[in-house]
Image 1: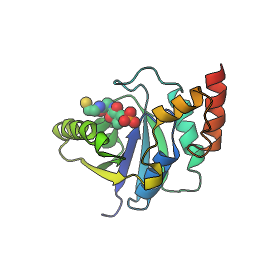
Image 2: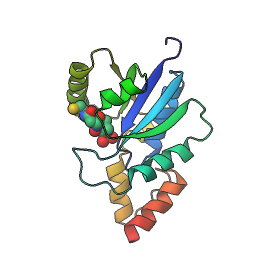
Image 3: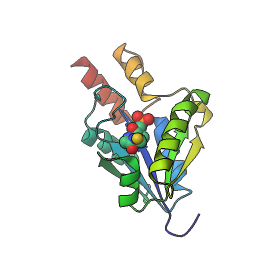
Length: 164
Ligand code: PNS
């Protein structure tokens, strides 16, 4: 990787899971600087359970100790956010073939908008290949135990938010 390379790990992170943290941590070993981009309001999803500030805060606190990662929220096109932050690469996690179609479409759209920004994909570790924010929210809604799947603070926040 070239000197001073910056990657963006974008997502809704509603909420962040241990699978996301694994991808971000592994990306931070490849790039000099990683910016976790928390989208304010995902267009393709219904209203988020947590605000963008809450979602960003969970990630920030979970990643304390990894010096080359910072967490920012954004409300623009992803490629504009990447350009504003001097990033050369968008890094996303892939869990299964079912992720491919959506990611392929995003890849083509982003390349059309910004051919100079490359997208790269990190394969989920096998222990997280089933894990999604949607699944975690569903488990928590029905009283399932999510403590192994998300940071402790997120598990507590899910219990509190869902009880309300
Ligand atoms: O975790 P998600 O929900 O899969 O993340 C989706 C995200 C944030 C990567 C995507 O919604 C996004 O890039 N949003 C910003 C708007 C944008 O640039 N869309 C893609 C090109 S039209």
